[in-house]
Each structure stands twice: as C-alpha cells, then as structure tokens.
Image (cartoon, rainbow, N blue to C red; front, side, top):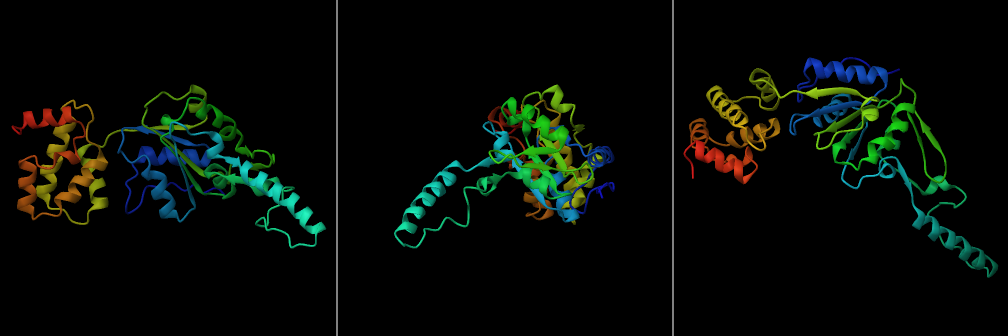
Length: 292
C-alpha cells in the first residue's frame, strides 16, 4: 500500500503547506518531485528529514558534472569478471593436476548478476516505499536527465550485461525527490515527468518558525536584531544573498556568546563571513555599515 499520508514536517523540519501538497501529490501518483529554489532553502533536507521521521530506507545520488546513468542505476564490473574468468581457467588446469582450486569469492561467470554493482536508483526500486534523493541534477551533463526519462516514466531499470529488469509498481514507488539550483535549464520532457515545486524564500514570520525548529531557546532581542540584519543583507542586491542555512549557522555561532556580547557582534557586523560569501559583497557590506 502506498504511503500517501500528507507529511507536514517534523520536529526538525518545517514543511510549508504548498511543499507538503506537492510532495503528497508526487507520492500519490508515483512520480518524482522536482524542487527548485535558492541554495540553502531546505530542498535537500526534505527527503532526508522525511526518511528519518518515517524510519524509511534512504538512498542518495549527489549529481556532479561527470555523473552518468550507469552510476545512478548500476554498472558491470568488467575487471572482476575478467579476473574470475582467468581464475576459472586456472582452476581447470589445477584440477587436472589434482591441486586445490583458487577461490573467486563465491561468484560464477555464468551468473552475470554477480558482477553488477547496484547504484542508489536500483537499490531504491528494490526497497518499496524507500526515499531516493537525486541532489543538484542541474550540475549533470545534458544527457543525464534525458537518459532518466524511461526509468521515471516506466518505473523500470534494465541492468547492464545481465539484462535483468528491476521494476516497481506505482503503489510501491519510492518517494523520489530531485533538487535543482537552476544552474542550467532542465529538458522540458524531463520536467514533464515530474511534479514541480519552487521553494520561495521564507518571509520573516516563516523564518521564525524555522528557527524555532532548530533552537529550543533564543533570546528575543537577539533574534530580532539578527533577522533585521539578515533581511537587510538580502535586500542589498548582493552577488549571492545569504540563505536560510547560513542564517542558522550564524545564530548557532551567536548562541555561544552572552546576550549582550551577541548583540554587540551584530552591531559591529562581526563575523560577516558566515553570511557573505564573496569579496565584492563583503566590501559592499562593510562600506555600507562603516567597516573597513
């Protein structure tokens, strides 16, 4: 039976109603959820927190510039197959001489599946109701998302060399979450196979709820001052605006000070390197606030 109960987040993760609905639709229809948005807005955290909260198997494929579908699905270990083939020839010769056979790890070259290394995609399809994260797909070569189209639309993988098919039903389909920072536009046909959601950057009221998930207690004046500065920085037109993740790291740092010292840190614009990530932006911030 499909796990289609609406998930509204956990003690550690705030899942806003729009995102919760999109995630629910994807799981109900057995389709991947494609999430786009600024870096640091919690795209990756959704599947991680969902798997942890629901105690489900989690499989992750971090996408890079050289990622291939073979790495994602499965590849064939030709080196091991060749070595075992050579061992079998040697063992035939040793048997003629009455010698003990060499070991090959229990594999047989007649069983090609013994040499197939499963990737996170195939593993997820073999575990009903698991969670599969394809992280930052916009970093992949252009052919990668196109090569995924068949598997996503037919819910099926064909393993290399052996031809074994791994197929999953709509009701047993893993919860597939695909994230993108929009470094490049994804193919239209690929997007058509997904439920789409864009995470809007949180308003201050929502941000307070997010912070409450991460900090049991935080002094009110400190929270107000840090949020004021944070959103000022976001409104400055920086090359790279600070994200939710960076705000949480900054608050974690400030929590190490007594309240008055933490407020002084904010007033003096100390430690801006946790929020501002380029030299040009840092110079702009320091000029505006009278720093060096």
